[in-house]
Length: 289
Image (tube, rainbow, N blue to C red; front, side, top):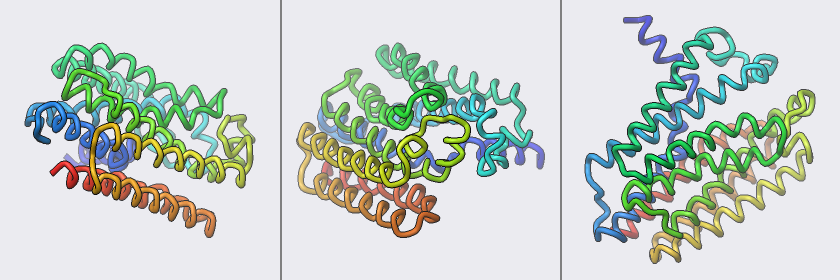
């Protein structure tokens, strides 16, 4: 039993399950908005709630595990990544590959039970989710690819409820793309020197610290803009706009923290961004309610 518990702990450390807080609020945000617009109520049903959670968890498990699998050659020499289970041998490559395949199958099968559009697009989503690890080896657009990986979550939520991709879900997606890309640029500042040495194409490695912070701020400005456009396109009201404005202040605070103390990137990355998604969801829920 203790060995099984240790395996679960190693898997949790591998995929950092608590970081699901970044994507889940936007999946459910899209689902309640879509259900309200289509059905007149925010509640979309218990079965769809279960299938949505299963899709979200399996997709993230797949993406994180595949990233660890493909990046072992990059992570092994990096002191910051040396203690990862995929690097120190706690999870072997064969077991990691089985975990990746299992979650990909769970994602596709679950999507099949949602609707036909979800099923067919599940294959496209898996390709995009797996693309990040390759992009950072040849393009600084990798930050945006990572953003798109999480940005697909509101589109997936809308597809699950309505079987369509409405305009507002694309605008919400674009907001998430630039939100994630912006804080990933900040997070990559920690590996700026290492990325340069190993030839990885992160924005900090190519353009340096000051330019990267400007680019990150630009991305976050676009993020708030697209969220405001999403609110307008979905005909939401005061509390939704208030949530977007507060999200903008949180992002501003994030940049202030990083500029004041480079060592506090983890606080800005994990704590503030975790609060942001949940806060925005709550304000959208209040507005719909």
